[in-house]
Length: 550
Ligand code: FAD
Image (tube, rainbow, N blue to C red):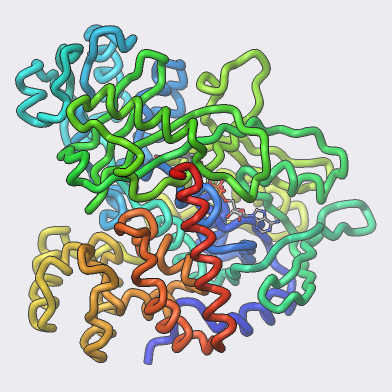
């Protein structure tokens, strides 16, 4: 039998303390995962430590777009847009199952602050900066043409609009595939490891990490030539392990999203619409739901308990109802909410909306590398840049470092054949297995060529063909696959980030939670108390997501 993607957790824990790593990375969001992948692909010895689950911080709570960022043009951040568009094209090629080009519509409204001329200029620049790598150039749409595509945009203020190309992704799985690739290249990657301090050598240089295994409570210490702080919104906190009184670098902005059943906001394209107050509203069709986001407001509060509040929900519903008046959305339509923090670099005198989304890389006097800001879209480049900086530290200690090969390295699930050929083949296999052919498209998007592993489980055990929710294509086999192949260690991991029931299913997956706990208990040898605890943690997550809904 082929060995599982992740070695057993105990073996990984032993490997953490068994030798000297070239690079230890703190934080398993997209930034840490990309840095781990880049370093491992250069042949470095890598440890990646995450205190919760892969992507459990900001990285699963994004707008799930791989985009140039049309809005950033208005703020003059041309370099970020250029780099993002180049990365978008690259990811469409290297991770076609996870990064799907889609046509967006941008409606123009009277009084919403963007004129036809500005939109035309912006989209022309967007096309130019993409260097012809988008599937097509933007097109202007008359009011009638726009309404033929999106009837729901009908409103007295609607003037005209445009169609342009960008991409949609699965943020949690993009992060996971970075980790999977890093692990396949030899990285030691472990979740539920909380870093609590740094060790330093006699010269005061950072030489390792002091951490605690949150599952056993055991303390552990590992040695590394370079240490990278990729803890996103927590990075100021992590910097203080190095310099006790380090002044804050970050300005945190909260971004909230909500989902409603697709039937209540049936858009067939992602819609990006400017609002009179200068923000953009996204309404993105995503399977059984439409994702609506996002707010952008200064946040001061606990970092570990961020949720959409009543004001966020009110703001999003009001904005959606302004753009789609006939939808008349209300709180009762909401399936789920989620919120996260943008770790922006504080820039004095600027509003939160004007603050740059570019990443920043700093090195402390003792050698701690901190990487913050940036976007999901540019994660590969960020990973490369941070390892380039780490390489300078490593070369200082006599370690040779290769150039990054990630620019041309396919992701683990990337099919070996063109998408249509791959999908047709998977459809046949799904049918041969006696499953609903619609499951093929779902498995293809979610797992790419790794879908075969899920299918094999469903073929081997009839019970694993059961759907987790009658309205969604997710199979019970995916939970077993998540535990065996994808490092899922809780009901929340399985229902929120390995599958999407938490934000796509009516009831947020509560109806499937018992079955999921049962399957995980079987795979991970849980006792009844552990199953109960995991179910209770999941219920707490659901309550947090509903906090603002009364
Ligand atoms: P995180 O994902 O937060 O990861 C940091 C990790 O560090 C966490 O998992 C945390 O648990 C861990 N950690 C913290 N402290 C410790 C410790 N002591 N020990 C161990 N681990 C620790 N970008 C796009 O390209 N497209 C979008 O559509 C998009 N939409 C967005 C919408 C919103 C509302 C927000 C907030 C951001 C959006 N972004 C988007 C930006 C993108 O999501 C973020 O830049 C990215 O997810 C940040 O990833 P990260 O790894 O730096 O941080």
